[in-house]
Image (tube, rainbow, N blue to C red; front, side, top):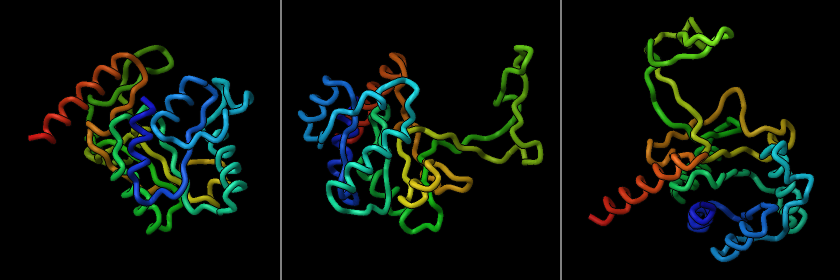
Length: 204
């Protein structure tokens, strides 16, 4: 899984420095085999299920800035659960955030149409009911969902707010194929099918 993210970032033109952070020896060894920069093994206090991505990235950022003497402009989080993300996505996202006055960018999938009865929620009584996030919105207004493939944030905002998101963000819209997020075996099967389809399509 992690190899796909490594291959993508290696080919990205707008990324100056990058690394793989993990506490798992097997993951670190695989990362090295694919040419990743692995300067440390993630410390134990950052290796629990309760640790947030923010804390891991803060640790990596502090390490890199101390090592290189460089103050970075933009930080990009690439989670290995998005195996179909490409180098061009990374470059385009960085360009979009760099040109924007907004502090953050998030990759999303969509648009979807917000129509009843498509969106549902389970209420406090366990009933499946209509989902209305904002009843004042036109029900035909399209909506988007984070796809977890890519987050980008300007350094100063990240250090101040300790967040990858903001009230207003630059939207980086990705199609259904590239938005694949692998959380379980079923997702993995879908991702493999997508990759096979896309490789076969590109070859023709």
